[in-house]
Image (cartoon, rainbow, N blue to C red):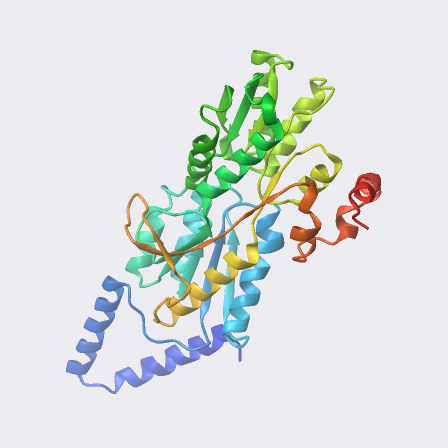
Length: 374
């Protein structure tokens, strides 16, 4: 009998037993149930839990390749293979994600792990889940509304790491020209934190020629923004580009090549996507931020299972954060590493994210050989 069917049978048996209770007892149980919904508490659960996993988009490689399978694996481990993950991807559509939350509530999942497309717009859905007695773990992005837990990376630190790498690449040329800043989407609270961290390092040390908030984090939008910056500043004036993630870095580098840069200026990134690692090996992209997804995914799974069982978060949540709507949210923040040509082997290869064969395809064989990636 699978987890979902066993829950249905259990519910039916419970309902049959309830018919034998006195009216007074039934009224008491009904009152307790309403109280549980109002307070967000749940009856104790065992291994038979349903976890709703809502991820924001499928353009960034990490969600389908890393986050989803890692969360599924850890939940299976924690529930002796009986926990069920109910998955949906919003494909960068906040309205679709709202509908997906409603469906999860209707299907009575025991807990939600939510990576919001739009952290503000999702607050209504979080409130609905809370009213239904379904706890919510905000994953990677700090959703607004009454969330119960949060796990992500130290996102201001991500911005600082990116900015420090760019300064290191520029060296004593840091004020010899202008840099372009390509920030993420305004609907993503992480983008604001990356921006804050990077400005804390860069302000006063470089001249910022143009700065953009990139709609939906799309590489094609970053490409268009970069083309505008090149037109406005002139290619001889641009000495570096702060890019908040790898997808946008790809669009930026395409624009730089099309503009005829003889030598590409240093470009940062984030997420250690395979294409970005290959660009780093080839010397086209200077840096990315390697984020150990297993740490974040495991924390989310452990929080979700604990909340579904009505248990304390224990040592999983060692930190706390404040959102615009909720203070003191229990949190687990995972450290990050700056990824450059010098530490590809010690990071993504050592941790099993990519094999050398995956990175060092024929196109990148010579560059890999020069780095000793064999």
